Amino acid sequence: MHRLARHGTWPSPITPALAASGAVRIGGVKLDGGDIYWTEGRPAEQGRNAIVRRRADGSTEDLTPPGFNVRSRVHEYGGGAFTVHEGVLYFVNDADQRLWRQEPGAAPVALTPPGPFRYADLEIDRARGRLLCVREEHADAGEPINTLAAVPLSGGASEVLVSGADFYAFPRLDPAGERLAYLSWNHPRMPWQGTELWLAPLDPQGRPLARVKIAGGRDESIFQPAFSPDGVLHFVSDRTGWWNLYRAPDQAVWPVAAELGLPQWVFGLATYGWVDREVIACAFQQAGTWRLALLQGQERTPIDLPLTELGSLQTAPGRAVFVGGSPTAPAALWGLSVEPGSPATPSRLYQPAGPTLDEAYLSRPEPVAFPTAGGATAHGLYYPPHNPEWAAPEGERPPLIVVSHGGPTAAASSGLNLGLQFWTSRGFAVLDVNYRGSSGYGRAYRDALDGAWGVADVEDCAAGARWLVQHGRADGKRLAIRGGSAGGYTTLAALTNTSVFQAGASYYGVSDLEALARDTHKFESRYLDSLIGPYPARRDLYQERSPINHVDRLSCPVIFFQGLEDKVVPPDQARRMVAALESKGLPVEYVTFPQEQHGFRRAETIARALEAELGFYAQVFALHR
Image (cartoon, rainbow, N blue to C red):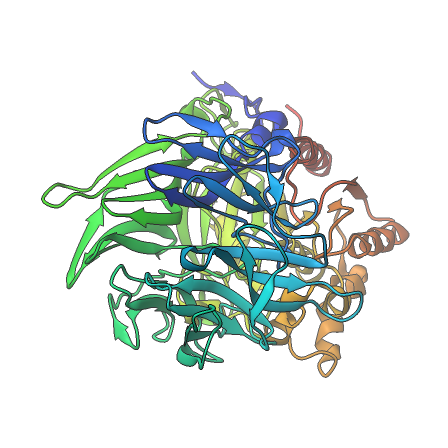
C-alpha cells in the first residue's frame, strides 16, 4: 500500500551522499597477458583516478599509490592517460602532467623531466624501447603546440616525431613496428567534423618517412585507426552518414545504419578489436542503445547482453573486455569469452565498490521521440517518478526536470545514474534530452546544430517539456531545466529565450559566448565557428545568443554551481550572470567549489550541489507535504 504525498516531496533512500558515492567512473581498460587494468575515478578520494588490476585468478588490487592521480590534461579533457607492458605501468600524473613508470611492487618513478608538456594517448613501441604519445606544449604565450612524440621507456626528454597540424590522436603501430598510423586535424574543425588518417613507414631509428593520407578530410570524421593481427589497417569513418568500420583503403567491413564511432572529447576511446585473426568484436549504437556483435567475413553475430551502455572495448585472442552498464546496474567491467565452436559467453568480471540499493527504487528510462521546430524530430530519455513506498494524490502531475547534456556534441546515457534517480525517487519526472546535435543518431542529426547552437537545442528542450505536459506526464507550472557546461548554456539560453520553464540550474555553464570565443582553451577555441559562426565576423550572433545580454528576458529563479579552478568555462561567466540577476532583483543562488575544475569529481561537491539544488526547487515550487 502506497502512502500519499505530493510529487517532489517523497522521502528517498537515495540521499545526496549516496548519489555522490555511486559516481565511481571506470574506464581506460588495458589488457596485458592474462591481467586486466583500468582506471577508477573515485569521488570519495577527492576525485582521484587510481589504476586497478584484475589478475587471471579474479583477484583485484590498486596499483598507483595515494598521492598519484592518473589523469591527462591534454585538450583539458584528457583520456588515454596510461598504458601497461609486461606488468610495468606508464601513466600521466595529474599534479605535474609528467609521465611516470611503475615497476611491479615498486613506487612510481618520473619518466619525463619537469617542463611545459602534457602527454596523452600512450602507445608502446616495444622494438625501440619507447613510448609514443600525443604531446601538448604550453608556452608562456600563444596557444599550446600539439605534436606526436616519443619518450624512452628508460626515461628522458621527449622527441617530436610529427608536427605541423593543430591536433593529433591515435598514434598506432602495426604489429611489426614498421608503420605508424595516426589522426590529425586543424582549426576550425572538431574531430567529429573532419579528421585525416595518415600512414607513414618508419626508418630504423623510428622516425616517420614520407606519409600517405589514407582517408578523411574536412567533412569526413575518422575514428580509431587500428591494425589487424595481419597488419591490415582498419578505421571508422562517417563518410556515408554513419560511423562505420572500413578496411584500408576503402572497403566497408559492415555497412550499417549504426554508429561504431564516438565524438573524440577524450583520448583512448575504442569500439572494436580482434578476438581472432579473422573475428572482430565491435560495439555499436542504434537508437540510443549500445550493442555488441562479432564480425567474421559477411557473418554478423549479435551478442545478447543485459546492458545498454558499452565502452572502452579491448580485445585479445579469445576474449573481449569492456565497461558496461544499464538503467538498473552501475558501470562494471565485463568480459566476453570467444572460443571457436562455442557460443560467445559474457560475464561480469568486476563491480566497483559502491552503495547497495534496492532496484525497486529505480525509475526505468523510456526512449521518446517528439516533434520540434521546423517539422524535425528530437529524442530523449523520459524517467517517470517512481518510489515503491509513495504515490501522489490522484490527478497530480509531477514537476519535470529537463536535462540538457554537455558537449553539445555528446549524448544522454541510459546507464544507471543515481544523480537522476535522486530526483525520480522523490517524485520528480526527468527528461534527458538528445537534442539536435547529439551523437548516436548519425551525421545529419549531429550536424543539425551547426549554426544553430542556442536555437535548435533550446527549441528541442522546450518542445520536449511541452510534449510531456500535453501528454499528461508533467505539470506545466512546475518545469525546470538544468545542465552542465554546454548544457548549462542551453539551460540559460532556454530561460532567456522561452517562457516554458519556471526555474533553472546551471552547472559551470556558458553565459557569454564572446568571452568563451576569446578565452577558452585551444581544443574548443574554434568550435563556435561551426556552432554559431566565425568570430568576430559574426559578432552580432554571439551577442544575440549570449544569455548575459538578455537578463531582461529572464523572469524566474536560477541557481549556479561553479568550480573556481575551471579553465574551460572560467568562473567569471557565472559571476557576471549572478550579478546581473541580483541587480534585477531576481531570486538567485551562487554555489562555488574552490578545488573543482570543469566537471565535479569530489563526493562532497556532488552531494552539496544536489542538496542545494533540491532545496532550491523546494522553495521555487513550494514543495511541501
